[in-house]
Length: 144
Image 1 (tube, rainbow, N blue to C red):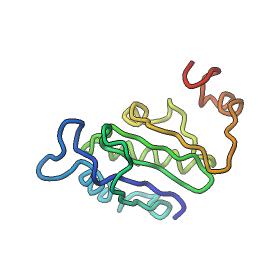
Image 2: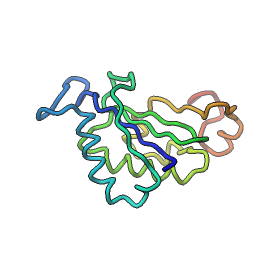
Image 3: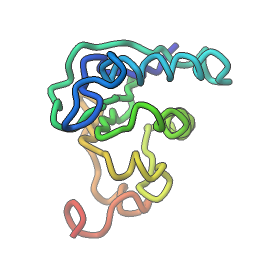
């Protein structure tokens, strides 16, 4: 397992409700993910880890994708009852790219809308020219 999906199990269910049916949103998201994960073809390539806080409490639910030498991604505002298919779709695209880059247009809509951070691998020098050439970024800085 070289890839990791981290799920904050302490996330509120929504921005205004900590729990639904006695369960925090992050815990429900983790449970639902693990049910689908068991039959997912890439389950041997990913670990799913619980974490107790990612510091993005205002954007519940929060999930991160990490792998050595790849870009790390952090997403929020994910609905724990409906985001599982999107999480696994993003994970497949993340796994398939050697650098972990997934273009905006290739991300599931709820993932594209919920992006909180894209972190380059430690020690790497991100190349703006390479990102523009790959169509991952527009010609200017961050959306300009």
